[in-house]
Length: 630
Image (cartoon, rainbow, N blue to C red; front, side, top):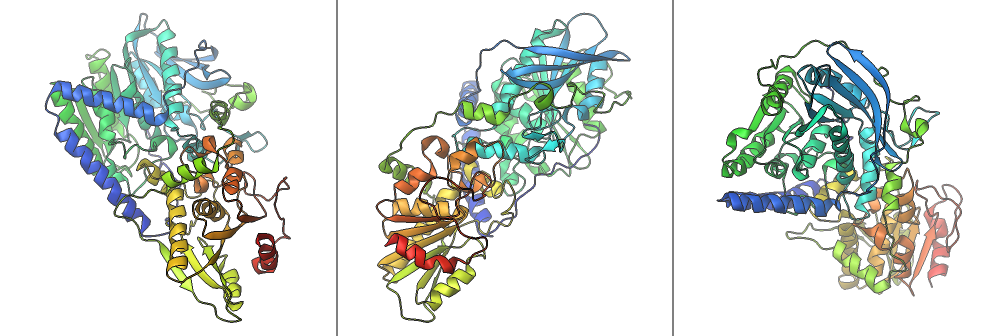
């Protein structure tokens, strides 16, 4: 953690300026209610009850920590001798066939030593980035295990050997791919990161050099996230020091909330904020490390520490919670690293040892490489996290139309104050006025020529611009992840609320403009939202889905998918699939042109689908649509 390295969150541009303030209004309401509950705590017993509630809530939101009950397989593949310590290059299995690559720093001194679990942030080199800090801890008498997070270092997901890279992109992009996946099975990605941390701690305890009564954890950025969440639910840790992460969602929510493992669905709606992760550890020693100019707001960091200190005070342990703030941006400058050494020496090691940092011989990532090829995918034939997620999923068969409508209604629930839908009614501009009207879901500009042609032919048109659209990064693999994730943290389904916006367009067409026959058109993800609305409202006489995904279960099970966040409904992959939702529209018709696969490519498939020549205008297919649905 020696050098500053910007943590690229790949923040998605907001398509609609109204959405974020509306979401933030509800976030602040939840957060303020939480502050009132924390301020009402008066006794240690009440604080302990709050801690239990926090842990229970975290485990419920994440779906528990996966349990495999398998032996802890491991192998040391090499040893580097350094002045005063050695580095063992090793891997251990977090789950069967799912290896974690790591470096173990062991002091040369005999006997049992305190040990530190060192989780890594979103640096592509992963464990190699920690070398200077881990080496200093080893020189000060600590055994240190530094491991690669999934999607980083030697654990790239969807790894393509010919490219030497992941087909998904960088670390955050890989995490977001699995984040959309777990959103659709009703769990949270952090559960898999905690599994790695838990098995890493098991490995540390198995080592004869380690004193199991003196275990600590640290990490910066994404590693700070892992440390904070793991410490909140892991009783074996005696001290914790998350760096460049802890803040409060009071300040953070409208900014870089973090990628999928950092943003558990329902977290804020369940009455939690980051200070609860600290407070859950009380009265054990805890050090929060921040910097003045981090994108994790320092004002929120000060707020979080002050909030958690109230709980520590009820344990008569205020001095056990420490806060170190360094200069500069995201990272751990020297002053905070030396605060880290001093903290662990005081609480786990020998307090008489100097916390001053020593120069250590630099090592390249290749020096610290565990596997022969540099990737577990090719050296160890490792399974991928997506394999484990899908393996644990139990798909419910043959959902009834009634069950599907019940789930859809749940996802369309909106808190007050509601966000008004963006609707625009366009009268016909020519031709004889048609009896039918078209509702066009228009999150992009592509539909404008089709709309103009419909109006020329005598059709009235209702344009519905669902909240948070247009999605400006529409061609990104993880398009719309930020807005969907923010809403999920509030217990809301953004795509469900988009269905609600479409229903408002149906209501206005029917009630205000007297439309008796309403046809709906939706392209790409908008077609899925439209199908949800049609399943709920029979006033949609027929719908036209174009270039929409034919199945979200296909995307869920694919190692790489495109724009799954845009059609992610909570737990939907478990409950039913897009063909089931289309079946719930019957006997009304669905005209489906160019259905997409997991990557949104139109590929031949069985079913009632129409495939069009490339770049053919929608209006050319209007007669076929009308014929198909009448």
